[in-house]
Image 1 (cartoon, one colour):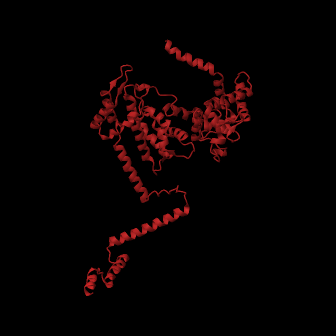
Image 2 (cartoon, rainbow, N blue to C red; image 1 turned 30 degrees about the horizontal axis):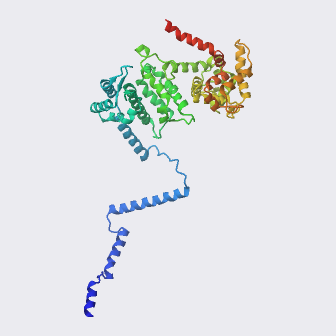
Length: 478
């Protein structure tokens, strides 16, 4: 009995006496209070507590707001630390992007390597390369230019181009793709440097500054007179706003600008002019120096009182007075700022920016942007569609000018029916903007309803087409 009790005592574990656990509880209380800790540990605990409270507060606000996400963030003030950090980060990022961009010498080296390591198609004489040549040229370019050109020689890029029966692609489209990518990347870097608040949009003065910085690199604009530089920048920037800012918010999205045809049209001025041994300056290029001077001279010629704005009477002289009075009236109703008043207490007048929009719309009637501008003027009742009464009212002024010009008499109802046949609207009783865009003759119809010269061109379209064909055949016979 005594032996068994001794064995049980030996097997049973011996725990610490209750009094020995008191120091653990005391230590936990001591550490939890922060007493005796170093300054760094206390600071860390306080930071953790503040962050935890901020996180809980944000969670409570999110729960109270429901599922609606935050869509507005207040921009930091101009001289705040947040704005300075943002600008410094943007500067370093753009600098890093510029460093990995190919320069002119790199592009010349790539073109030489492409031509030296390609094969010539016997049938067409086109210089081409297969995928093995493509990889070999990639290795040579990496050795001579550096790793920054490696991204262009990926399998994905090779598959983007059209291949012949032997799996080869032409080297010229590939090289043009590289040049365009480099050009767009450089343009984005330049625009982002001018974007002061870093929101991805350019204000009017920022866009004009970008164009002024681009002028020295454009061969056809090197001879621009310095006093005309500011006016040219306004004229050039306005086309970007007309086509890339349809909601008229007064700012341009950089991504939209880069993808627009306007930037490609501006970059065409890189080519040398005919006097310098290149192509002649295109007369229909809005960004050419001759076009900008023409527009400026036109505005000054219309501004009889020299007050810097145009009245309705002054604008009626545009295009030799072929535009109808009702159209000019509608332009002022829809596209001239309300509430503005000219000098001497006159009614509101058209400023230079509004005149540029007016010219852009008339010269680009076939585009969705130009047709949208004109449709607002044609929509007499602001209902979003045109009825037979609207078309009759609009064409009545054209008919009056047509008769005054000594032309034969015509029936307004016949012209109205012809317009309906040209559009073929979804609703046979009304013509919408979508109908005009879908029929692909919206610009012609807008000209017929606003400009007697436009109607004359439509009425004599067959003779004009024959004259163009004869003019095109004449040089070939010589």
